[in-house]
Length: 71
View 1 (cartoon, rainbow, N blue to C red):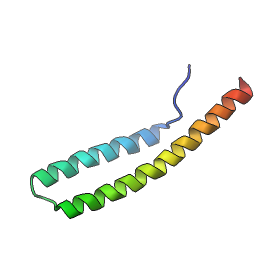
View 2: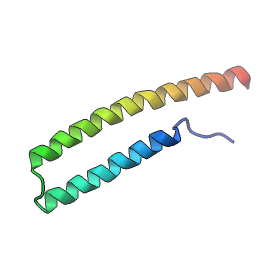
View 3: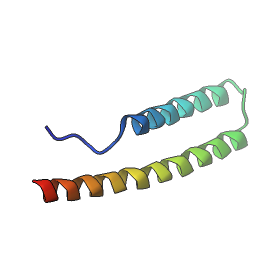
């Protein structure tokens, strides 16, 4: 059975970021946070996702190579 190369901890991080986006949206609607603060937090989340994207891409390349070598 073939699985994606996304690790469980990476899935938790992605889920956490998505939940964080929801919280930011809710805070903005309720005026608990300014738009500037929202964009600042989104910037951090995007940086984190870019880093995660690189890590996941490396895992995919490694697993593809491993499958070719052992398969």
